[in-house]
Each structure stands twice: as C-alpha cells, then as structure tokens.
Image 1: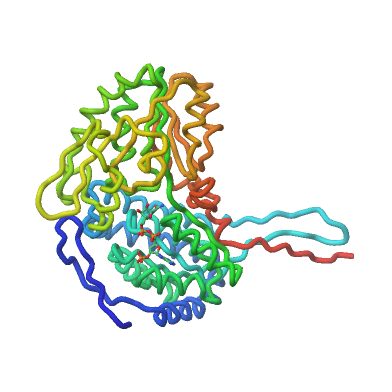
Image 2: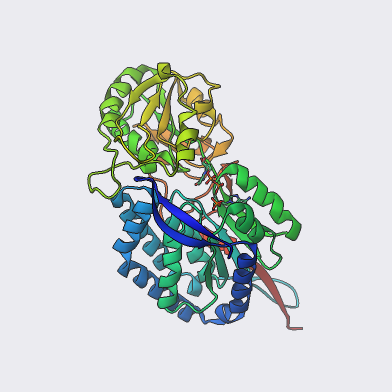
Length: 454
Ligand code: NDP
C-alpha cells in the first residue's frame, strides 16, 4: 500500500473520503487470500452456500438506505435512482441464492458406461467494474460467481470505490468466510492489469470501455483466462409514425438522460420516422426541459452531475456547434460537474455524436423513411448492446426485434435490464451474458464424467 486516494463527490467537487490506494503487491495478496479460501468455499454444500447468499442479501437489505446515500454521493446519481439500484443489488443476491442447488448437469447416452456432466467453479475470479453503476454492476458479477463456488477479487473504479468497500464489510459481518470476497481499490493500469495477468486468476469479468475491454482480452490470452466483457453501446430508440408518440416521447429522455447518460444502454440515437418527426420533436422538447437536474440527495432530482471534470470535457467535445442543438435543458450553477440534457438535430451521419459512445446526456435525432431504412440505421454501428422499437404494428415490432443486432431489445418500452433475464452485447459491445440463468455459464466449467459399467 503506497498511496492515498481522495474520493471526490461529483455534485460538490469536494473530497468525500480518503482511502488507501492499492498496488500490484496488494492484488497479489488478495489473489492469494482468494486462492486459499477457494477449496473450502467450493466444498460448502449447495444448501449452505445458498443460505450464505440469502444472509448476505438480508444484510444488504438492512443497509439499503446507507448504501443508497453513499452511492448517490459518490457517483452523483439521484437518490431515488440509487435506492432502485441498491434494491437490484439485494434482488440479485436473492436470485442467485437459488443457483447453488440448481446447477444441474445432463446425462448423455454412451456405450459401456454412464456419462454425465457437472458444473465446476473456475477458482479465483477477478471482477473489474466501472463507476456508472458501481455496486449494481459488481453484484451482477459477485452473486453468480459466489453462487457457483468461486472466490473473487473485486476491483471497483477508483472514482467510485466506497460502496464496494462497504460491501466487503457487510459480507464479512454476514458470515461470508474470510478470503471469499476481496476488494482491492487501485488504478486500472496497475491493479486491474495485474489481475488480468495473474496466473492464479481463472477469469476476468469486466464492464467498461471497449478500448480497455480490448486490452483485457489481449492480456488474458497469455494465461488463456476466461473473459466476459460488457462494453460500450450506441443504442437506437426507433420510433415509427404509428407508435403511441406521446408515450415514446415521454419515455425517450429517461432512456438517454438517466444516470446523466452514463449508461451503456443509453438510447442515444433516437430514430424517428420522417412523417412523425415534427410531432415527436414537439412532444420531446417539453419532456427534456422538464428534467430536474440538481443535487443528487434532493428527492425531486432526476439527473445529477457527470462523474468527473474529465468526463464533462469528453462529453462537451461532442457538442461543438450550437447550430445543431435542437433542445437543451437546464443545469444548476456553481460547483459540480454539470452538463445540460442536450438533443442534437439535424446531424450528419458521419458526425462523432452519431458514431461514438458519448456517455453523457447528449442524444441525436435521426429521421428514417421506412422499416428497411430503420433497420439499416439501427445496425449502422460497431456496437450491439441494447435498443427499443416503438410501434403499434405487432408484426413489425417482432421483425425489427429480430433484425436489430443487439443483445437486448425492448418493444414499446426502454427497459431491458432485469435480474432474471440475460444481459450482454453483440459485436463490439462485448461477449458473455450477465444476469438471468445464463450468467452461471460464465462462472463454471462443464466437466464430462464417464463411469465404465462393462
Ligand atoms: P474504463 O474502461 O477505463 O474503466 C472501467 C474499469 O476498468 C475501471 O475499474 C478501471 O479502473 C479499469 N481499468 C482501466 N484500465 C484498465 C486496464 N488497463 N486493465 C484493467 N483494468 C483497467 O472506463 P473509463 O472509466 O475510463 O470511462 C471511459 C469511457 O468508457 C466512458 O466515457 C464510456 O464511454 C465507457 N464506459 C462504459 C461503461 C459501460 O458500462 N459499458 C462503463 C464505464 C465507462 P480505474 O478507473 O480505477 O483506473
């Protein structure tokens, strides 16, 4: 431990807390603790491991408000949103508490004996998570990893380590055995990198930028580590003229300005059928202007600041000319990394704001002619994470849902993340699935056993 990390509160730009900053040697020590704890944790009976996870869910529920306030302050997100996210953390542990007793295998007919499959844990799993949904995204990885019998080393983003550190204390108090859950707070380029390279880490589960995801996939190749990557997005919100335009326009701001746009699922490309464009824009404008941006701890707030000054500069670089700003909301003055909800129209198809993930409260509106045009535009991106289709034509909705190359898609809704359904990307949005029954595949190896009977 060489250093101290000052954690900043994005709404005030003031120091929130100071925590020790780990280095590569601390990662090695955490991996050694996790490795030492693995044999006993994998040997815990399925029912007892389930009980551990239920106890952890109960303990997290008991600390719900404390964790929500901490997350709201550290990540700059509205308290109401933070409460929902911590609720999802609890639900995720409850859901995967059902998994240890349901890790089923198959029997396969073979000659001269019996063959069947079992699911084995991987060992020590490294979890590297971002700052946008700090404890929620950590829970999506922690819960299935632990349920399957792995031990973990969690590296939160340096900008938002506080709920992960508190989680480790709560887990210990809830009776999770020593060494099963380890949290290391340190920079990605040293601590994250060390986890990726470490020979005793069997798998990396990563959420973050596509650029870092690429380097993790490359770094993991040396030790043939398992890797799951949940990366960026540039999701389309496709609104046909026959949709309930009021509902689509009322929901569109939340789908891109929620979490101040710092959401890999942000529907930041709003595709609107040309004949409905004027009506849609007329409905969208008051909805955007009504968004209450301000103090994350105020109950009325719907959008907080961006995470950092650097992120605000990065987002501002996409709004180079006021000419394209069709709608702009309000922001508070004074300290805080504020950025107003912004809708750009018209935009050039090649503009950075159309092609790159902005990760801030900036949306582009792009008109389209017909279904074929909408499909082409929706898929005209390197990403493939999420998206929405709004139409009253059920057959068209289903055609669009199948044609859009994303891991999740919603019809007449912008909600695509649930504890019980798989979540993850196509194309450069990553690979592997989190949540739902599918996440367990990424934290287990299938073993085939043959017993000779002849
Ligand atoms: P990063 O991808 O850099 O960070 C995500 C996590 O990876 C953090 O814990 C970070 O650590 C860690 N990390 C960074 N570099 C390495 C490395 N070489 N090896 C291992 N781990 C590493 O995202 P940023 O925070 O820089 O955000 C940049 C952009 O990424 C955003 O503007 C957005 O476009 C995208 N992004 C997408 C997310 C998503 O949910 N898909 C989430 C976050 C960002 P640390 O930060 O502590 O150094």
